[in-house]
Image (tube, rainbow, N blue to C red):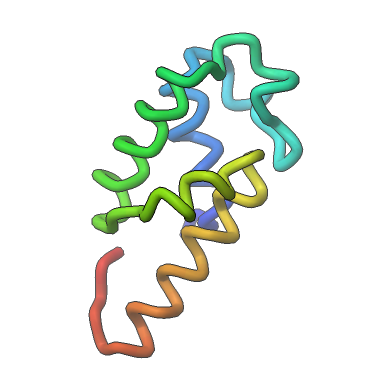
Length: 88
């Protein structure tokens, strides 16, 4: 089973149009040229569609690199598990 980080890396590779091998936990707008504000919105939409969750503006502001995004997704997964909702 793929980890959350692996799934986020694959989504990012698709959104930013780069090989998945180039997407590391430290990947960010600073080192992925195609990661601009529009791509950030596309990333959020892709994450919401894939994981079945909506992100708040505050959460989107925290999406500074791939590792932080994966941690946020994992946190939302834990919250839904506690509430009894299965969304993956």
